[in-house]
Structures are given as structure tokens and as C-alpha cells.
Image 1 (cartoon, helix red, strand yellow):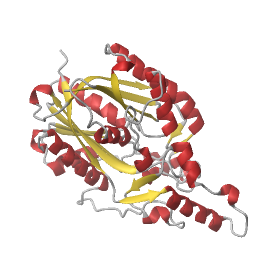
Image 2 (cartoon, helix red, strand yellow; image 1 turned 180 degrees about the horizontal axis):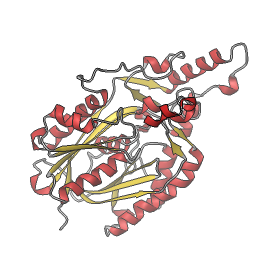
Image 3 (tube, helix red, strand yellow; image 1 turned 60 degrees about the vertical axis):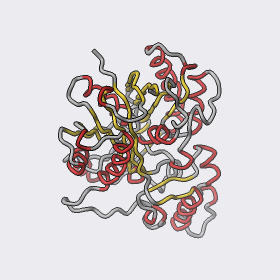
Image 4 (cartoon, rainbow, N blue to C red; image 1 turned 120 degrees about the vertical axis):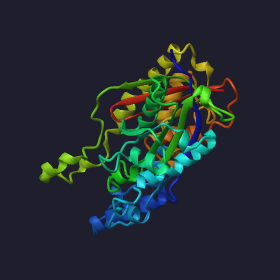
Length: 366
């Protein structure tokens, strides 16, 4: 028998530093001038207006601003912490988790499992999730998982599976994303895409919930199709090939046009089939909390699902302020844009990205 699961709380950690398109472009263009002195570099420059038009992004939050904007550095400067100090990813995760626990009206003592799902883990082991578990004082178990930008929705599906198997009554899902660390800020085609953030979600068995409002999980669907169009080859085997250890493919790379063409119809079809399997149609959806990668992608996906252009209320956008925060993006949209939900209203959280991977979670306010 399927045990009803609820999302009863979400949390968000926003880093303290914001970078506007203008600031990012000024840094990039200064680097171009330093790299090509004495020449007309106009054709090589980045452009703030173009970035906004192409992506919908106006700004982003990052854990370190100084290093990114320094033309001599152009990456975040994050000093390595000793092994006895809380890691930066765990620190971000805990900040978001505390908010989610408070919103759910529960405490860490009531959680039985922790899942950290994100695109880039700062180390292979010990798991960041176990570090979070230890810092919060949670009994039970914890594990990390990575399905790139779909990590949060896949983690929610795993949380439901743990509850249905009887291994946990409450699960804490956290998504600490330091996307600025895997971004090449010297690549004009992608230097503007990502920002940093962390989100958290409390998933619990319906009969345990004490929050004044919850969101019943009507179903979770996951899908993957292999593609090289979004790739990052950073890994522990890099040192076995010293001649390529610092090559361009050790950071985020994508074929953006191909991704757009491939992913949009796949995601729209995925959501439509998930709705049908749950006995719903697109007209039953009050909101689509979509992955926040590109405004045009979200507009096209929403149009294909709904059969008409979605309003800002139907398909909320946060990437203008946060940029692409990988797995955290759809959860930020859900966290910030659900206040108008009444009992019985339906919505879908859907994320998609490298893999390709697509995860959807159908919700009903209760």
C-alpha cells in the first residue's frame, strides 16, 4: 500500500553576494582586453543586454564575488577548511534545513534520513549528507546523490520511497549548489549562467505531519536519456591523465542550442504523461514550478503543457534574480511562489538537465 507523503516545509539559503550582468560583463571584457592588448576586441566582448535577452538572467548570488570579478582570477576564492571544520556545502545546507524544519513545525530529532542531492559535491566521501546529519544531531542515516539539475526532484522521489518502505517517517532533502565553482567565467557562451544557493525540503508521512499547511505528493516520475550535450569531466581519475588535467572539459560545458531542441519537448511530454497517469489534465494545474535554467525554455515547456502561454503566476520565474542554481532552482520557485495556494490546488515541480534527466513531483495543497 502506498503511504501518503507530504511536503510540509521548505527552506532557502541565499549567499550574501550578488553580481549583476553589468558587473559580470565588465570583468569579462576587462579580461578580454588584458588577453588581447592593443587590438579592437569589440567582437569578443560579452553584453549585459544580450545575456538578459538570451536567458532571462539579470543577476545571480554567489558565495564569493571578489575572485569571480577579478580579471586575474575569475573564479570563486574559497579557502580550504580543515577536516574538523564544517564544510561550506554542509554549512549552506544546514542554513536552508533549519528554515525548512521550522516551517514544517518539526525538529531535527524527528528526522530519520537526510539526502543531499546536488550537481557538484565538494568531495567524494565522507558524504556531505552524513556531515549534515551529524551537525543537526539526526539519528538514522544519510547519503549523497547526484542527478545534476534533477537532483532535488529525484531526491524527493527517493524520500517518498524511503517512507513507503518503512525505513523513515520523515526525510530531510537538501540541495546545496555552489555552481560558481564549476563555471568557466572566461567562456562568453556560459559565463553568465549559474548562481549559488541551497534549498531544503521536509518530506514526511501524512499521519505524522503537524504543520498548518502541507502539499500531498500525488506522484513522482523520473526519466533519464544519455546525452553528452551537458557535461563536466572533473573527477578523481583526472590525475591519471596529467596532460589533460586542466582542460576545458573539466568545468561545465554544454551545447545550448541542442539542449534546447532536445529537452523542451521531452519535458513537456514527461509532465503531460505524468498528469495523465495521475488522472489529471493540464487544466488542473495552478502552477508549474519549473527548473530555472532559461526563460525561453520554461515559456516553451509551459506552453506545450498548458496549450497556451503561461502567466507569471502560472509559471513563476526566479532565474532573473538567482540565475540557474541547478537542482535548487525549481525548489526556490516553489518556496517563494506558493502563497496563493488553497486546499485542493494542484501544481508540479519539474527539473531537468544533464543526463539528460527529468524529474517531476505532482502536488496538491492540503
